[in-house]
Image 1 (cartoon, rainbow, N blue to C red):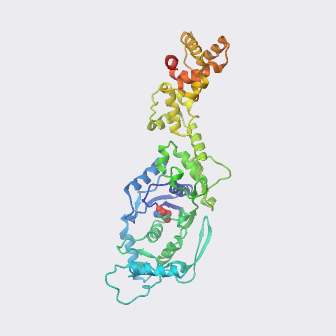
Image 2: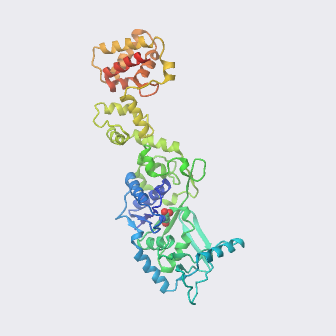
Image 3: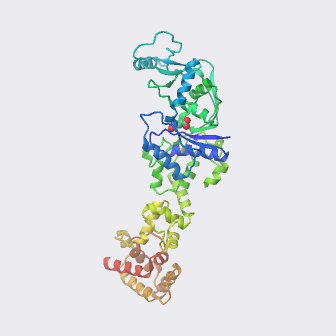
Length: 461
Ligand code: GLU
């Protein structure tokens, strides 16, 4: 059975690159009918943050990614890691290293001076003398000194390095805490992880982890190292490029399905298809179609997708979604009309909320440019005449088409162009030249509110 996992270190918020890696793993597990584990890599006690942990769990919840079993915490598994350290020491596959920090620094410096790559020199590998006093040892694993470490990466192809490129790295620190490359291998093996999908910043950790797998006789999983997401200019994505924290996207009014659709296409493709539901992805995603090269973040694409998903929500769903954005129209009489008139006008829930507010709330001010352009000397009189016709209309006015009829009748009777009433009316109702269609707006706010707004504009302008 396919077992995939996401293994974040809770040292900062969950960024979109992390979410994308998690998504790839999750989709692959789903597609294979396998399992997906969420394992928190919190062995570095000094750098862990509770806030980061909460943000990860929250992000998973928001986007609707589930995991099998409970969340696993490496910090609760130290006993297990210790057993393996003891075993490796007993089997003489690992050893205590007493090199002090000063000694290590000096070694590194002299190697750098000699133009060599800094690496541990194996001083304590076969040491059987009396250990120096006052140094708490670290534990190092014996890495092979000859041969090659070769593995097939599902994205990058064959990776083949000289074994001696991997030095005897530390598997447990002086305080006894185990290190990342050690515990990740132990956990992936013990948890039966078959497919490791992660960022390619880990590509050169994999040979180290293979040393651990081999020392303990564990079978290797499949590895897939996913290329990074760059910014629009092709440079490393940073905070400066806007939101990178997943939960920030929620606040900015993105729908989780849009974000997931956006992320899956960064580094993965399926013909030239752009729109994917999560359900569909769960049946077609294959890590072998992951791209070798990095992909560029593209805000316009994200906005386009978000607009698509907003447009395709039911009005009842949208009313719920808008609630956290300060719009409560769940019980509004004209909810359907209001959302039909606006839902194609907002690329985010924030924009949609603004569009709705603009209709529901009488304008507090009037856009100067719009007034100059659309509110002419004779506009007040035209507006007054229109209101008179509206209030005296002998048929019930409910639907946009009812108001449309009045508008049509008005311009025909007055023998004026539509702009003569359209522009000042729009300014009076919304305070600006933009927004939904006038008949829709009037149908939503009703005749009385229409007349009130017009009278206010006449008095103020
Ligand atoms: N804890 C590692 C990180 O957050 C994940 C490594 C992995 O997936 O193996 O980068």
